[in-house]
Length: 256
Image 1 (cartoon, rainbow, N blue to C red):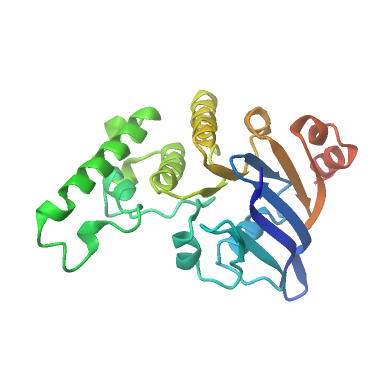
Image 2: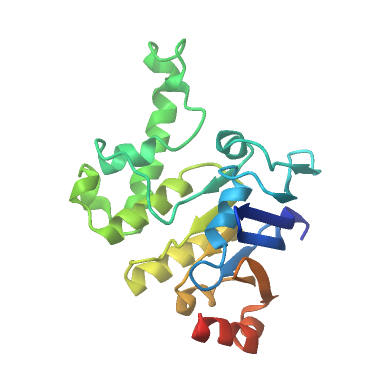
């Protein structure tokens, strides 16, 4: 499959700290790619550069556009990257604590008709879309056992449910590429596998995923390819079975 995302010779320096130092990765369309490595290896920094939260010190990020060409997106702000079809979730969820669980899910989809000033006063223009979004939101919450929290406030949720909700919000969009930052962190093993089964189903429907995850016991059963970062550099890459048996990777995790 052709690539949907390419990061070429990507570097990000913070003073004397080289959080990323010459990293090159590619993500094929309709794939699930894993990004792993010990704490501090540069995984979240890579996500931040790809999605516009950081400008790269060096290198470039290219995304396949609607015409099929690779287009540079480094230097765009996060909102612009989002509108091009890239969604990312956060290791530390960023939710609206004053809203209910359902409301937090419903604010995520872009280009909602009811948000437009000229359309908002006319219910007939946005009611159908609102109903469809609400049905999708409740369906996702039920899928992951959160239906009883639909009208709960964020402050009433456990850490695991907050983490799961962050991923559900990302899945509410119509993106073509999802960057998920530790979606299974703190989540029950059975629910984590249910989540990854759902992600695999979405891949079969044409979506693409780049996933940072420490739960290797779950991740390695679902990814097509894996990149390993260590101290800001690309340490290893390959199929899951190749990476887990790579002596350099074993040393990095035991020693890191």
